[in-house]
Image 1 (spheres, rainbow, N blue to C red):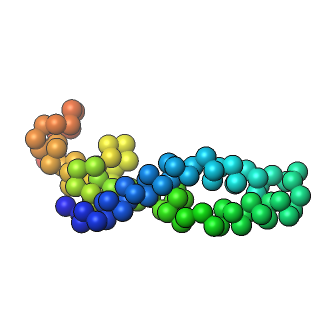
Image 2: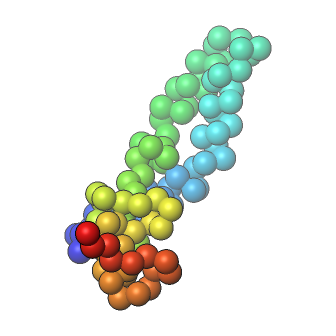
Image 3: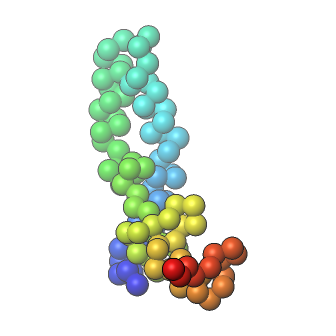
Length: 101
């Protein structure tokens, strides 16, 4: 199990990203719009820089839904490799069998 504080910090970041997504998208569009004057584009970049860092989507860390483990993460299943193995051994993942050779 990951530390509860790490998991909660990541959940807080996810909420911030969700709350600030519209404003961030609008400012990015303004900053990248070539038809606007340079001063206005620069002002949009400054406002974007003033936003909280944790509101950026790149700050989110993929974590296992079961254990909170940040590494060995399968995006499609949203679990870590260890949790996936445990679930497969219990027969909770359809079609997955233990291999032997």
